[in-house]
Length: 228
Picture 1 (cartoon, helix red, strand yellow):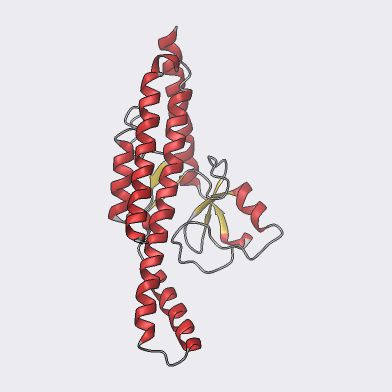
Picture 2 (picture 1 turned 90 degrees about the horizontal axis):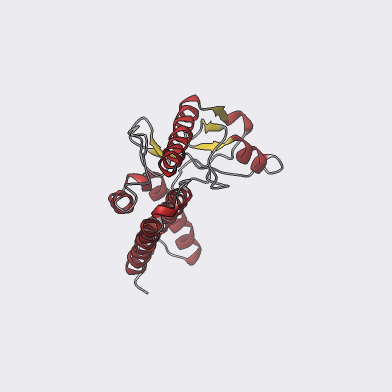
């Protein structure tokens, strides 16, 4: 199996599905007085973007694993040494790997998706990234959706060990009876288990969340006015 080709085919399929949903939304636009179809289109696109991130992460890990195996072959005398060396090389590669969301492939995919969602995203013109994503200091991107529940956050908290953001309810439920939980964000190099002391309220993310919710209300109100 050509792993790279499989990745490209899967990403293309996600794009094609988004195009189909956009065509359906356009065809039913006059029936969308409450903006429900637009909301569905944006939510489905967000899920596909999340899938894209995971697919690219898998491709990156597969590439790192192949390189590690090839390098370890010439540096190992026994099968045990080979396994240990491969594991070490993979960990080193993971620490050096860039955030998936900063890769050219991810950005190109996101841009392609947004070309089908121009009427459904950033309705208030706030300048934030589409599909409920906002830019952090340093150019990294985070989602306003919780990485566990995939639902829009209610109370964002930041993990001080890596900087990633979760919904307070979700992360506390996850670690309540299990302190062996690591950050679920794809590509995160933080190997520390999440502790309650690692979590702090993120006021900036909360403000972004409020602006996003306000923008959604503006879309619904605008469509309702037009239907009157």
